[in-house]
Amino acid sequence: MCAAERNDDVSTAARISALLTAFRPGDDALGVSELARRTALPKSSVHRLTGHLVTHGLLERDGRSLRLGLRLFEIGQLATRQRGIVDAARPYLADLREATHNTVHLAVLEGTEVVYLDVLRGPDAPRLPSRIGGRFPAHATAVGKAILANGPEARVQAVIDAGMPRLSPRTVTAPGLLRRQLDRIRTEGIAYEREESGPGVVCAASPLLDAGGTAVAAISISGWSNRMRTDRVAPAVRTAALALSRGLC
Image (cartoon, rainbow, N blue to C red; front, top):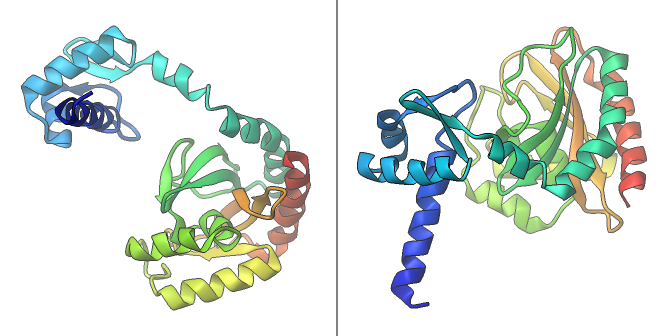
């Protein structure tokens, strides 16, 4: 394959990725014009590429608009490593939600963001922006800090180099402060988030470790700052994480 062909393949893959990721939480169906606006692609390219994606089941037509296709869900279910973690963690997450009536999360790190693999919402918990498949900057979440504290230095440096955006008045944006927090988390096995991802929300998280002691994921409990004592729920999160880690090794 010549260089021109390789570049064209990369360009096509990038455009397809842009189209599929243009859909956001809450979107149902989007028109070609809106997809073109969100991706900055010409409408002619959007027409052509979405036609191919419809043919292969990755998009579905809804009148003159398009929605994500069922084939994408089927592909997602084939992510076996994540599926195994979700299946193993679900009983522990259910127990934590039942015991605390708060929202519990299972998340992994991808780049500088956490991706939520499972979310069990509690009846007494705030309505959080987290959702299955959703992303959040790692430095502003307890699950993210739990994973960063128990992994290679390159992960931490990548987060710092990305700029650590401020999501709330309490978001940690200073590299030195983040590193001090990670040192404490590494020692105690518990990470806290105190209104760093949004006002009024607190969280306690603990990492899931592989046989070598590296975090592969993290679980957490989130609730209202005026209702949930993070120091009281932290032991339960830590105990569940340790038991789950043993099962994953």
